[in-house]
View 1 (cartoon, rainbow, N blue to C red):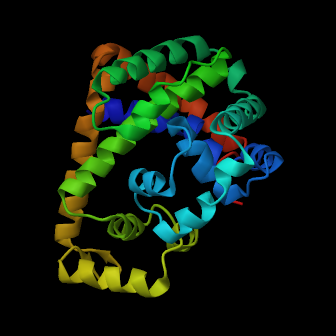
View 2 (view 1 turned 120 degrees about the vertical axis):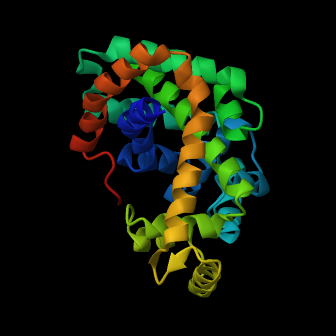
Amino acid sequence: MKTARAAWRRLEPVHAMIYFAPEGRRRYADLGLSARTGYFASRSAAFGRASPELVISTFYNFNPALVRKAMDGAWDAATPQQVLDARHDAASEALQRARVHELPALDEVLALTRSAAEAAREHAQGRPLFAAHAALPWPEEPVLRLWHAQTLLREFRGDGHVACLLSEGIGGLESLILHAATGEVPVDFLKASRAWPEEEWADTEERLRTRGLLDGDSFSAEGVRLRQHIEDRTDRLALPAYAALGEADCERLAELASPFGRAVVDAGLLKVG
């Protein structure tokens, strides 16, 4: 389980950069979409003309009012296919800038990652974002195929994570506040990007304290236990993809993935703003 998590985490920047790289914002702007609308539309375009309610339900921790405002008129400005094409073009351009195509292990990493992504398709039930993206055709360009494969693995894991949160009675804003308590992401960024009203954030924090999951702004002992439980369950739910590789190939992917993640970070593709 730890090896599978390492393989996913080390390669995750290859997917995640699409939410931060300026190439994406430029491509969406060309379609008449703001950066915020571009985010919601590009990630949900695999559904077709996704309604705000579908985006709210599957993206989970964003303020519903933010989603409704961002999605208002999105599909009048551009079709889902146009948005998907813009997203793919942006991913290709950004990863070329990071020189990912020059890394010597590209073919092997792509083969392993695609094998894991294809295996995940046999376990699509209950994973709507993953299933929608898994139905898209595979790109021709090797670097873009790698991005697509990692996108599938990210959405596969993410859908499982939402299922874990739901099973533990952790709502969208609650999950966001608990994420903030880890210190992994600045709380100001989470507040700005998810756009929950300050009063609602404060009220939800207090409910989490009452529930015994927070001690001040930090995790209580019970909060630490619950978060670890959710992370472990998320890892287990993601295993069907990586188990198909076998332990040796999974270790090999984890070993080879690091230079790809570093290339993305070194190129500044994960910088906010």
